[in-house]
Length: 112
Length: 112
Image 1 (cartoon, rainbow over the protein chains, first blue to last red):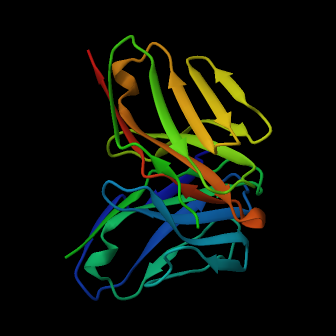
Image 2 (image 1 turned 30 degrees about the vertical axis):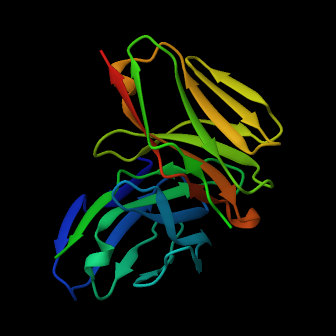
Image 3 (image 1 turned 180 degrees about the vertical axis):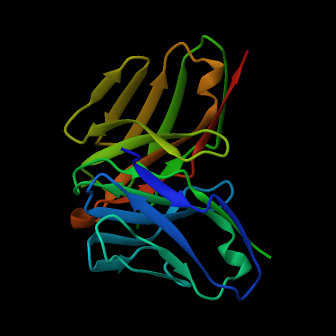
């Protein structure tokens, strides 16, 4: 098992550009999550999904969108990048609500 | 409100014990977690404790839970330079969705 994989590892965007951060897990987990980690801070939940076709907002959803068309994939979309979205983004998954979360290696995004 | 607090920094000498503390807010949390993040890397699950336990030991790691005070601690015995990292505690919040609320992280610096 590869676990949770994320692409790209690094990206620099200009203000107003858009991009999609990819997240894939091969553990057949139902629950998937997107977090952002700002410098010197803990992780904040952006969006989460409890299964294919079901998504919901976390603490900091503004400026982002997600979709969950398959169990494996949970892409995060930035439509109009802003400097405030400069952060490290982590995707995570878990089998069910009582299970532990497994994290991907992260995507470091800089918006200039 | 949801708030998980940790001290920001801890410095110890190699071979000493390290104790990292955390206070959480949601008394209904079923699981509490400790994650380790090395520089430039993702989060690695270290250990977790179920809310009906007071203590859990896993090799050099000991987790203590005081539910009355909502206090969680992680003790690392015989601390090594490879233990230098940021340590995050996290509580499960939100019942059905297994959302994690993270602390701000404690930077552990191990001096040789």
